Amino acid sequence: MAVMPDHWIRRMASEHGMIEPFVESQKREGVISYGLSSYGYDARVADAFKIFTNVDSAVVDPKAFSPQSFVDRRAGEVIIPPNSFALAHTVEYFRIPRDVLVICLGKSTYARCGIIVNVTPLEPEWEGQVTIEISNTTPLPAKIYAGEGICQFLFLKGDSPCEISYADKAGKYMRQRGVALPKL
Image (cartoon, helix red, strand yellow):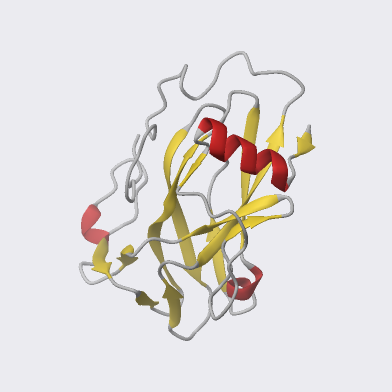
């Protein structure tokens, strides 16, 4: 399994719509970087956020998740309370090839501020906007900037296509747009 380089990512984005919209080169001036990098793609966070709140003293249950655990915000920047988290989604829409697995890593600029990004792997033939979990591990409020880089995706190409893809399984998060809350 090999990590795929910039020219492969560019070709797959332009010829196969793997990433839309696609930013050809890394944008850095005055922003947290995003776009094509040497061996990955730095995705942007959209301006729609679901920020965790404990106003109603709800229990977080992945089998019976209550949307009331969040407050919705649409803004160019948001504040995540101390020791809390938010859900957001990528600006980009991804279409993953059958012989590729995608791994997500958080941006070092945010990580150095105690802000951790988690995304589960993008499986072969999954497509959609990626729901991003953003954790503020600090005892201070943390600011997140919409339209700027939030995470980097690494594309791992398998030696051959998988037998059963995410599309074959009719996965529950297929073709999601916006933030997708937990589903059972």
